[in-house]
Length: 256
Image (cartoon, rainbow, N blue to C red; front, side, top):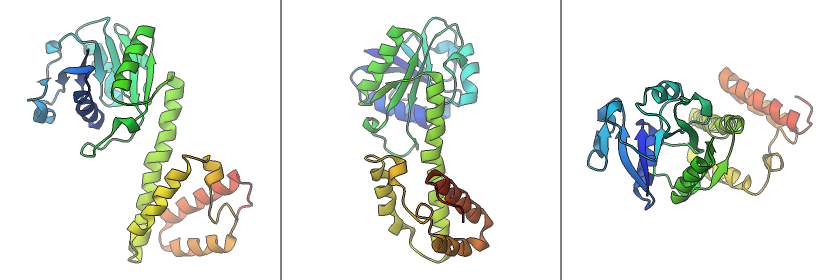
């Protein structure tokens, strides 16, 4: 049994706690957060604390906190030479205080606190200095049903950046599309099968090969029509023009 202590109360911390509770290999020994009320709903399931001096000994301490808090929190932990990992995609392994054995347990997925998450769909990127620590973290990930990938800090940073493009930016484009459909009373839900098909297509083809649309085929007439519709919203128009230009550059099309 691998004993774990979680520090933090955000989306990642909450989903990890729920997932660990379902495994036979991992035991969550404690859950720390400086604001106890945020984790009090789980007080009957785990020992919750808001005082670092009360931390028990465990195999792994998971800092599931904001990026800015990792360095300071790791330095405040009242012990040394224990395995301390963070869950960030963009923070260096070496931001964890050097008095600890350091590692990263980065679940590459989007988390919303109240949405169910199946960890079979959550690849976990692992980084560790010591080989034994890496294998311990890999065992934890496998027990969740996750696939694993050993990465270094530079690889993890670019994966996190790419994740912002495919998730956060794409979701914002969904929001723009929602605003566009609302402007004429059209039903955004009609687009949902298209959203799913687009996501499914890149499971089999590269994004380059999967690209379709007026920008790729250099359909100037359609592009002009779209831009005319967007004349009343300069923000949406600028996004359309920027992405159209990006697609044309990628596929060797002349600009409008």
